[in-house]
Amino acid sequence: MKRAIFRNQLLPWLLLAPQLVVTFIFFLWPAAQAGWQSFLREDAFGLKTTFVGFQNYTALLDDSQYVDSIGVTLVFSISVAVLALSISLLLALAVDRMLTSARTYTTLLVWPYAVAPAIAGLLWWFIFNPTIGLAPYALEVLGIDWDHSLDGTQSMILVIIAATWKQISYNFLFFVAGLQAIPASLREAAAIDGAGPVRRFWTLTLPLLAPTTFFLLVVNTVYALFDTFPVIDATTEGGPAQATNILVYKVYVDGFLGLNLGSSAAQSVILMGVVIVLTVIQFRYIERRVEY
Amino acid sequence: MIERRPLLQAAAHLVLIIGVLTVAFPVWLAIVASTHPQSAFETGLIPVWPGDQALVNYGAMFGEGLSNLGAPPLSGMLFNSLVMALVIACGKIAISITSAFAIVYFRFPFRMFAFWCIFITLMLPVEVRILPTYKVVADLGMLNSYAGLTIPLIASATATFLFRQVFLTIPDELMEAARIDGAGPLRFFWEILIPLSRTNIAALFVILFIYGWNQYLWPLLITTDEGFYTIVAGIKRMAEAVDSLPIWNYVMAAAVMAMVPPVLVVVLMQRVFVKGLIETEK
Image 1: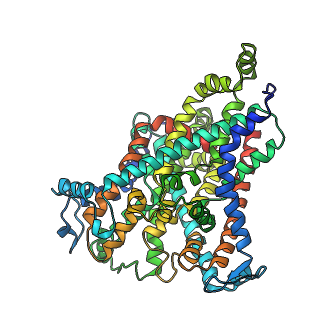
Image 2 (image 1 turned 90 degrees about the horizontal axis):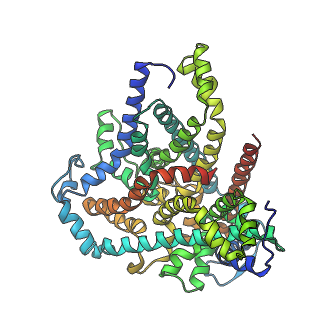
Image 3 (image 1 turned 90 degrees about the vertical axis):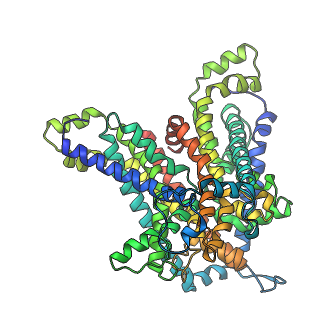
């Protein structure tokens, strides 16, 4: 905290005003609305609204579609997080061995960060297009019949690939920074003691990368849960037969297209709970890191 | 690197080359697709090598768009995206830097309350409160306007935290010296704090520009007037047509144009961006 401060009382409020006004109007008020709405039920014509307590929530748990959607979300998020983390770690380890070409490789790997998730979805949708795409053609040689508009598993694979492709560059940058932060003296000492590259990776590099990996795990989970909305919407739209209907997409479909306001609001509140838990985990971890 | 291991080195190169190619492959196909006539997508396989219709396709997309499918010319959508990205980036930086200044350099009642109000925005992504936010914007008459596209996305806890962090590392003596020399808070802010945070502002600008440019759900919901379509959201409307009509050449030309500006920003400002990204998020 600062010792030296200015004494004005009005000025700080003026400086804070724009941020606070935007926050209240577009964040806190809508969130409170969602909270209130989640206890109400509107009839089909929007004429009558009744207070129903926790019924919207209990109805969700009884709804097999919602339970399925939780399962779909778990499969999707875990696959994206694990794939994106392991591929980018492999690439970062390889770049870390390079002396002169590291910068060139980094430039060539970094740019997908700038590609919109919706476009990433579109690009892979094109490659996997059942009639003219390259991937289905190659898969046919292997005897696999690809049509993600009919097959739920294939459609899930498609969105996982697109979402992972987009996230690799982000993880890669953090892993490279994490690897550079490991003191060279430690690796040299291990090498002199006779530990080869594989042994050094498991006993030295990976443990020292643990903070980076944990941070990325949280960030990737948030990404897979919320920021992948455009990937789904631009490709499968949750289908076929709800096979890729992740929770955040279901909030939108039920609320905006299905106009089931109470249920959509209850889903929003549950998702907000998830974000709060993830944010708390992330910040507790950062606090701990500062103590080192 | 510690020891010479030619085999391992070769393997590392191989991994990187495969990585670079895999990452670039979908974009290569998109660029190639945007240079072929529509007839190339009717049967068989998508082309892998460039064709000769690039000028025709891009010319058509820039000139008239796909008006019969509800997609206006690219030039208008690119302009809207640019406005959206710039206003969001500059707006977020401006309101966050003043908030951080207020929180770090002043003591006033409810200071922590204000801090928590900003903090809580981290926990409320647009996607989870989409319906009530839409309603607020509709009630304020901000549908189909630049204000509606940008202002609701402008609050930023991350940027406020970053500037708070930066300000906390600036020595107190600097402010005491400024005060002795007779500078008031605003002069101190303008002439000392802003110049000192210049690199952070630049890095944040890159990240926020990309964030603004790539917005998808929000513009898709609140724009129904073609004049306000942004390119990333507009592509969805074109892609829906592909099921019946294989206009992949036009769709991919639009996709390429949607990627070029943010990718250029990242590549040209790579150094400041990489440093900024890792500092902002940690």
